[in-house]
Length: 420
Ligand SMILES: [Zn+2]
Image (cartoon, rainbow, N blue to C red; front, side, top):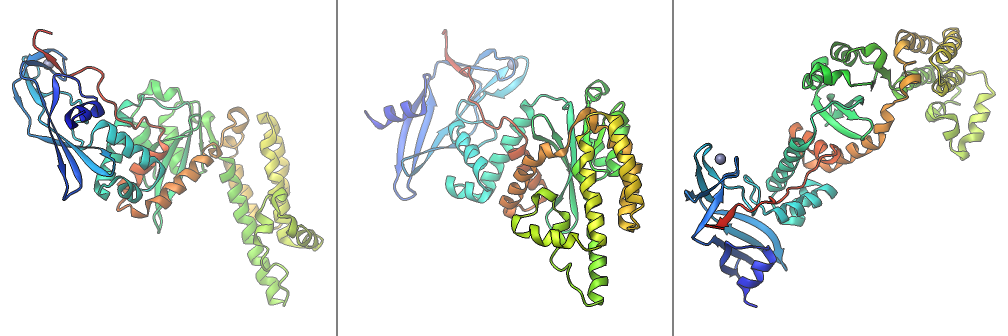
């Protein structure tokens, strides 16, 4: 078999396309394949799909293809243009690679597959691309995925904030809690940021939202109330964020007490931070004895930690009325603890109670997105090479957006023989 025949097979070329030349470039260790079409053909308008005779040709395009053994392989082709009576002069839909891409469909699929598994830098290294080339392949993949994605608001969404880079820059993330995907990444954690997501949908679509899990964060509450009908019944403050407020209070109590005790020359609270923050059942076996020992002493932090531990039961109730009843007794206990940070936390929770007990009806938390969080952290780690925020955001959509990222070769051939 000669090399033209071989590469015709390998590329899956069908007439009227044919290979004019295969050049083996020893110096650069690459292979250049030149493709042309037979003369008597008609070409398809990319918009209305009608066939016309060839108007002229676009300048030569070079597509990187899958390597041939260890040699980088390039396909050179000039694509015909048509002059459609309705749509004017148009280039045919390329059968080699997407318009705007310098890769064949097959090679681009390969790059996207690699990029799904590793960092941009590693993708570039493994595929023999520059950093910019592998970045543009990811960008195209995201654009493709987003164009294919159905425009709709998920029924159950999670709103979360994520810190970005060092310092205190934040991103607002919106999750589809049922599909475990990131639907939106917005600048900072302001009301406008979340509203810019909601604004993409009309009122009918926004009505479809059944529940929204979020932190007790006023800008998110305001945005959701402004755009989601009946939001007050749909917002559910994420239980882990709620618990975080109480955990913080426990920690403040410990710090203060530790300081007081140290001044009196006792350091029994040294190194005990997590003993008070961990869920009881998560205290490691080798520290259980130490913990039990501390519990026998009359410590403020011990009381604070018990109050925290008891609040966890709140989410076991299946009915709102029971949640309210339980909260009432917990609140009484917490506010009579004589521990200022705990009292403050309890009061914060009380002001937000209406949307804590909505949990009974919706039973959502952003923990559905916890797996997602791990993924985002991984993206962050892989993102050491990100030069800016837009790139970071793009990578989140790429890895966590649940998007259909792969390019697809057109099913319909763009050329046919005249009279066929
Ligand atoms: Zn047309």
